[in-house]
Image (cartoon, rainbow over all chains, first blue to last red; front, side, top):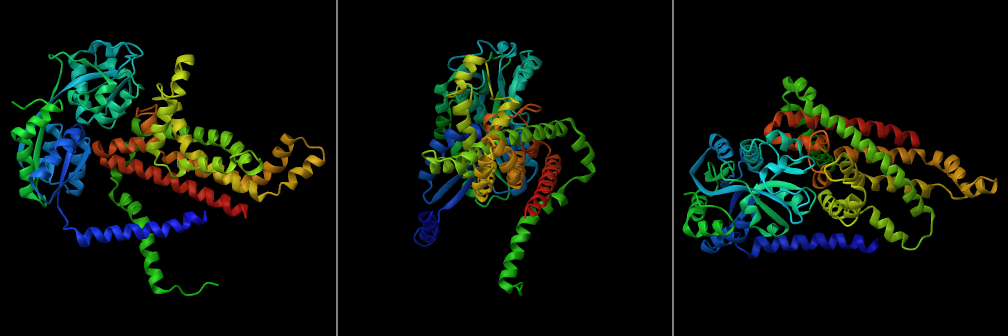
Length: 258
Length: 260
């Protein structure tokens, strides 16, 4: 117990010292704040962010990943984003209305896919199986883009009511759906194709959704009005839509816009 | 002994009070009071409220049933590794609840270390059920019962139990008629604290039990889901939780002062 109390001042001292060295010895980098849909987490943190930082010395890209609806709400109330990359046009529309955006452009497409645990406990081989009795289905909540797209696809397949009766959890975003299915807790979930090509893809089995009922998610990106780093933000948007940025997106399972 | 408060102290104290009160006050200011009726009578809110009450009461019961014997072992027995056990059982108090949720998934999930066996042998699945929400909530609130009860037991002289035994009382009878009545104030304080903690539980529940209205979507989860789609409704639901929490504290304060 006595050792524990001695540790506290030592820790505080360490924190103070490291804070000092941050401000005094290092030139503080220019920060670019990017709010991005959680489906972009892997490609943005692994490739796009580091590549943009390498091309712009002294710039640090700070990401805030989450469900696009939550991000739009945060931008509207706090306005702290330079760039917004949304998984749906709807939430970009909301931000375009308040506080406004510039340079809006679509930069990626994604399609839906059914995921099951590798052992496939629910016996899922087609989208229609999602309405079978006793299948435990996990979707993203309504309002979250991937949740809305999934319900559109289920409606297109004519099994929305049956599938909704099987929903055991409305998750916060696609990453939470992937986590629940990869852990083997649910029999199936509906997420993006790009989720299956990510690191969690190894714990998942993918079942295709036929093209005639599948839904294409189009991702818009834009500079947020009032952004502190307007020019840098425009540069980030340019990089994402450049050949190099597009190649990164494609290697992470996204489809090109055209 | 009450003297004048030095001015710097008073300023910091005032800032401290404002810091705590302001967010609560802001909820009251920003609440769309005109929607109060529809927000609270809506099916979503009443379902979440009922589930929250059920889950938190069940978790409190479970915390008492398991936590009080655990506290007795910690306070009265001399089993080896007792100090380690004491440290371990209060870890959930300082653990981020989402970590507790991931741990529960790994342990009691359908594919978990023990959960796999439960599922295969009995078809028992906790995840996505009300029992899952109760398990997650108990995990975070039981330590409060253990702490309060153990402190209470330590303040009771074991010679009372020995005296009762010397007069012919069986151990069970002595605990029931001698120790428990003396322990009642601490038991009540522990239970109320555990219930308040259970009522506010979010991270472990959404991680382990998921989020489904009527089954695992307790009031905090409903607030979280509503915050984007219905910010005004989220504020009103939040205020409902604030009121419940204040009621808990007022009740508990009465208990604690009565104990002295």
